[in-house]
Image (tube, rainbow, N blue to C red):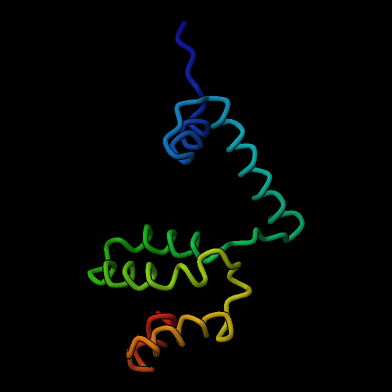
Length: 117
């Protein structure tokens, strides 16, 4: 008799950096189910950081002709806001980035365009 693993475990395994460890995949799946349940039952949304959101955007929009431009812009902005939760990103948090770009001799329009893209 051939025992097959449930497809959900395979999906979880593929999502965890390509792990081949069944137990790790199972833990990840349980974690994701709990996150989804919290959102559905209690309305709790996970805290997302900028880097996660940027990565998701790049992966979901890789078909766009301009995706390489977005990737290079996100790479420039990442050191300034990459670790921040999305709710905490505003004009004040990117002011350091804009000031640095202006000090490098970049135009104000280009500096603000990079963080608003």
